[in-house]
Length: 279
Image (cartoon, rainbow, N blue to C red; front, side):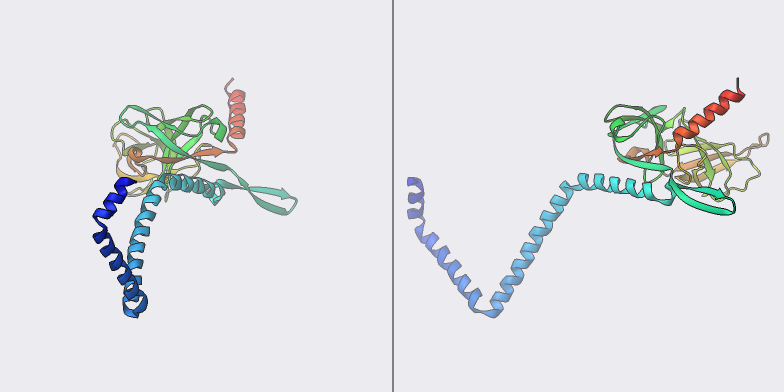
């Protein structure tokens, strides 16, 4: 306290001068319309600049939370979209009653670990058994296909990336309807191969490839990519087609786990059929 008094005593003329200047400035602004308007406008500019910077900083800090919220909202929208429902037709005599029944449900998740440089690649997501995630569920993103759930714990799941030699997905040429088997050949992480498309089908560079819907895991119509090259060997009846994948596996952050609500029923039916005719 003693040092404060000494400081004030030493610089009291400067402090008094500054105080008088502030008082004079205040009187001028209050009693003159032009100066008052200029001061208010300048204050608004400064305040606006400060608030803008503050909003940018807080917005950046909240970006992670915002992205997670958007992912959840997108998952909900996917779950109620038309592609998640199938028509159930019930016939009673001559009366036909059609209703919609939900076939797919989506769970948003964040990728917390991912590999792309190996022959067999995996990733880890932050959703597990407690969130309704189970093995053999499809995983997609807003750009296209991602992979298939492999193992789950209560809070996490391991996903077999599409960039894995053992993953094959039923795919079709969107405008032709012809379908085949899509796989990664282990070379370029941006390119996949599509086989079993008969060479009598007319195809072109740039044709869109989507999921066929012939798998209970992947809904029909999920984007896969576009044809970048193809050829028809003289001794073969099928094309060799290469697809530019729409998913950038090096930038995956948020994905959607696809829960097929009819998967169990379909699997049981197929198992019964196989047991009956293969024994």
